Amino acid sequence: MKNQENKPTFLFEKINYIILLVGLGIIALGFILMAGGGTEDPNTFDAASLFSFRRIRLAPTLVLAGFGVTIYAIMKNPKKQ
Image 1 (cartoon, one colour):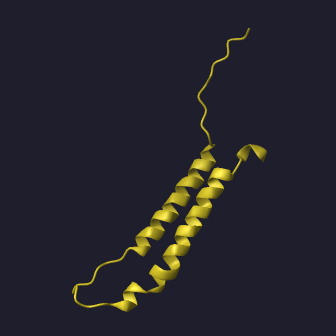
Image 2 (tube, rainbow, N blue to C red):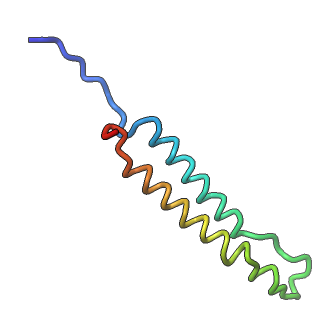
């Protein structure tokens, strides 16, 4: 019998982890863009900043794109190439 060492292996390859971190960064950026600064006067309501393009369209799109990149990183199988 051959003496075989049982090396612990990672679940993913290095490229999968890199893509996963990029996806998580995109998600974090989306949530940062969704959050916003407060107003100086709490008695005033500034609808223009609350319902801006950045918070309503850009940030949720980035979050969804980040989830897509993360799912791709999980599903990618580099051994098939």
